[in-house]
Image (cartoon, rainbow, N blue to C red; front, top):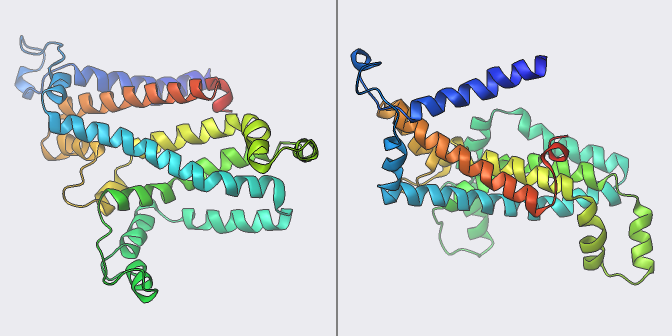
Amino acid sequence: MLVLLWLAGLVLVPNLTMLDFALRPNLPATQLGGPKDGYSFDNFLYLWNHPSHGWIFLKTIWSSALVTVLTFLICYPLAYWLGQVSTPRQTSALLVLLTVPYLMNEVLRGLAWYIILAFDGPLNAALVHLGLLSEPVRWYGDGGVLAGMAYAYLLFMLLPIYNSVSTLDHAQIDAARDLGAGTLRIHRRVVLPHAKVGIATGCVFTFMLAAGSYMAPALLGAPGSRWFTQLIYDWFFESGNWNRGAAYGVTLLVLCLVAVLGMLRLFQVNLTSAVK
């Protein structure tokens, strides 16, 4: 019963309220409830009729998928090492080292990346010193946003995969190797199928967080590097058009849900298993 109340109060009611705002026009307080205050799809059609906003929306979805893939490529080898190769002491030490930075506020971690990617920052200084660059370059823009988000959501990918991989009996890996299977085939036929629930969970978490991120694009994005969440923010707090901002938010929510269900279907994992 308490779970249902929690879902209703924190999930169902806010989203239904946002949908109600999205389907109604932005009117002065004196006209609310009047003849002009009716339901329509005008706020959603506004996105369709402005191709620049549509491209920003598609870029956000595509970039979120890219962040998810990048984070998986980084985390899967590390999760396998933690779950099957490292000693308990090594596992504990590395998990502490990975977790400590996340005790800081997300804004502070974003500012840290801002300093790292700065024109006179340590990244440019190191690359110039090593001779990989002849002069500093500006890293801000979509590349900086992707790097910042991949770091910000690293643990959301790593921990679910690690939890799945750590439950795999190492004897199965040894048996596959004794039967002549190479490393790639062992991962493809043994490890990945066993860890698919953790992989699906990590991908869902990472994609949803990346698609809804505002801090990383605001801090690390170039002036022309717009993110869909920034458009939603502008409608709510700059233009004061909550109805259109709600329509953009509902659109992002629906596409994220479609993407999540697609990933669960791809990994052949049901929603109950993914959220355990």
